[in-house]
Image (cartoon, rainbow, N blue to C red):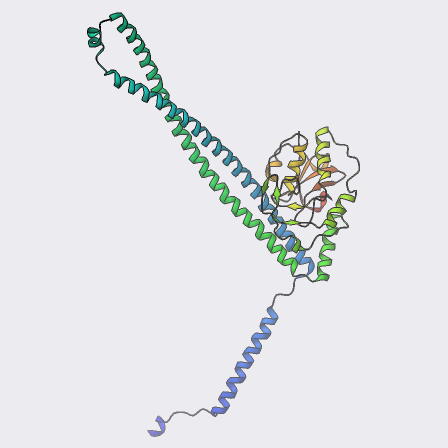
Length: 383
């Protein structure tokens, strides 16, 4: 019985057990280390970085056009709200004037004692004078009634204006919320692209810039991402907080390269004027949300070019494409707007010979480029 109650002894001694446990832990740690190394993400190639940066820039441009649309709607709502508020203030002033007139009439009636007209006629010593005064009083009563009507009309108008103002204010706040959301999206996409580019070595950076220059058909290179540092862009009197890019060397090269300088047989004087304006902007930096005169985004440039020709275009790519007559690619003429990507997120001004002038993206100033460099989505001819 005692033998059965005796605990079983391990075939290994205490020292052997500790040694085995140590070896097991070391083996597990080594296996984990090698497993982690085996599954670590490989460093992306320059081509992969370029593809990812291109995707981020495209998404940033989509968000930029949404930002532009939200800003346009916010500006319109603010203008309408200010107009309604000013009209309400004018009507309130007229209401106060009418109320003062009614108060004066009421005070005059109080001072006259408000006696019954028959009693006043019976007591007067000059009936003719009384009757004359009575006629005047009747006319005053008519004026009083008209004044009361005017007060009621102004009150109703003010109530309506206040209701419309409240609706416009609600719309304005909604557009401003969307504005902030799209701005955050743009800044986030551009910052992510900048982080990717900053990870490249000097050699990889050189290969990346050579690939971008080759795609753009230009001998100039893009700027380093740290030049796209979030500098605020001032556009036509408003600050958008855009991200700028474009070195002075690149700008000078684009202005002096002569690209697209050949004479263009524009179909009419307005198209010629739009192209002439766009040429004068060559080398100016891309700033998202910018409409000139010192910087542009893609739709800001085309809008400004056609405005110089006396034509008002809407602000965004997805509204500009509907601003004229759609034309097939085979029938493009100088001055046409050419659009790219499935979301209609980029636009350029066609100048003939398969070339356009456009504001590409941060780090790439306004330049001449082939329309084949991006997925073609459609074209519009401005009347």
